[in-house]
Image 1: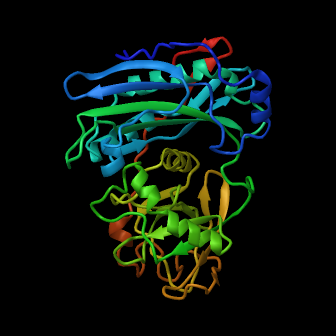
Image 2 (image 1 turned 180 degrees about the vertical axis):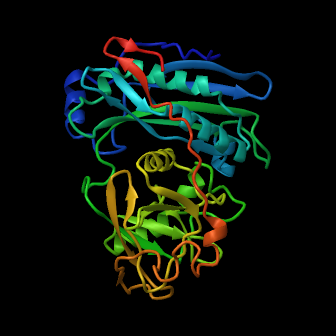
Length: 367
């Protein structure tokens, strides 16, 4: 039972039907926003409360708000899709809720109960149901829950006042070129996160630290950047916005083990479960880049990826990577790879709750 209800305080829409239809015809990604948003506030004295759905609009923050000075904030991202019968669903939103709780613990923020997280999503989707695109392609309604330290205070400690919001944005393909093979640039100049840091939390600082690497990738004609470990720049961590999975010709699925510097993706977890169901041998282990020998058939969802690598301290040299990702002479599990036998293990099979229904044409249904 959710303690928060997120009642809607106004039904007045800020965007007319014609303008909304024009936006939905070509939504892009992260460019347009819906009519309403959910919000709640936590205080050290009273816990969570002040929950409601209100018209979308600017926030009022003090210049001394703790988030502006100490970066105490986290967020999530997931999509709502319309099915052919008009109903609206998301995929495993409880996994996003649980990950947001883990992020909150790492950033010393209060944990929002899973049921309250799900209630906030359903409230926004119910209010903004006309913004969910029709079931004709990969368009969706992107949902962005986020939490930040709103207390007016200058001093290094966890905030005593925290705000939670959910905003929504109609979304087309994330990559401008759509669904086709990606070009990935491997950087060893920059790292996304380090040992003992916040790499396993979904917080803005991790993404800010990825921006120079992402710019480097774009300058070299790539769609995405792949980060290596911060200490040795030899083992794979993740891309700027996705995890890494490699599939070998002999039917093994390899992915970097979670070291604390990698964000555990909901898509990653789902792929590992589906791979086992389809008979692939799943291993989480350390994946080492072989200099001069290339990398991989990497997948995010169903997108193939090609990799390019720049040798360290040669800023303008482009080295196209040949097929092979793991050096097959040295990296057969248990043969010549010092960490293979110890680091590899089968991924445990976890029950899959499946998709969650958020709304039908008349309103919101239960999950």
